Image (cartoon, rainbow, N blue to C red; front, side, top):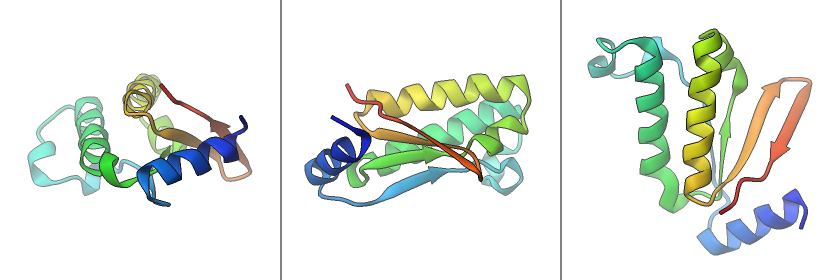
Amino acid sequence: MNFLDKLLATSRQQNSLLCVGLDPEPERFPAQLHDMPVAKAVTYFCQAIIEATAPYVCAFKPNMAFFEVLGPKGMYIFQDVSMQSAEIWKILRVNTRPQFLMSMVVMR
């Protein structure tokens, strides 16, 4: 099954065409996250978004650039966020660069 077939199947299963972008910008986080270390705040923020929207979406799309600016820690955060997306049976579409779009299918 290719990416589009899996996307269609998940869309039907969820009865949704919604894809949630995960573009964490720490300076725009709620005030209660500003006291946390940035890496912890980004992880917490993305996990909260995933948990809150999981029943309503067919896919998540983390934008790699928002994680890259955090340096090496950002890659670990990206991995954690991606694994959490995988745990709830959603397709994960990774936006790596404007000129490249890498699609990965993450299903249980």
